[in-house]
Length: 77
Image 1 (cartoon, one colour):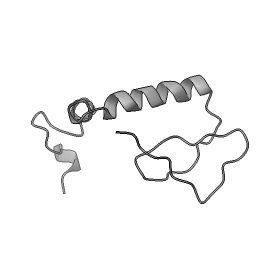
Image 2 (cartoon, helix red, strand yellow; image 1 turned 180 degrees about the horizontal axis):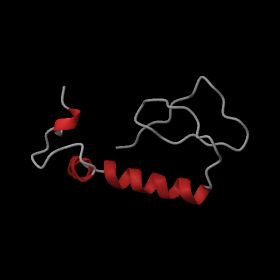
Image 3 (spheres, helix red, strand yellow; image 1 turned 30 degrees about the vertical axis):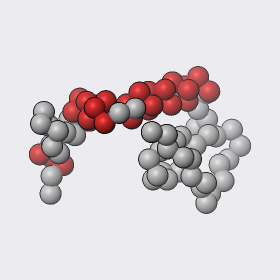
């Protein structure tokens, strides 16, 4: 699943690049991102979001979901 880039209400300063996100606009990065790092980030993002299974596995490794795929205790209500 590819995320469409949203047009920001705030133009980026010269030399800065926006990072793709999931529809939330957190603004530009505070420093320019080299193309190779941005490419590596995009590749990792696509790897994680390629399927539901890979996304769940990532969230479990990050401690956001428990072993059963439910929201971990610190993130519940």
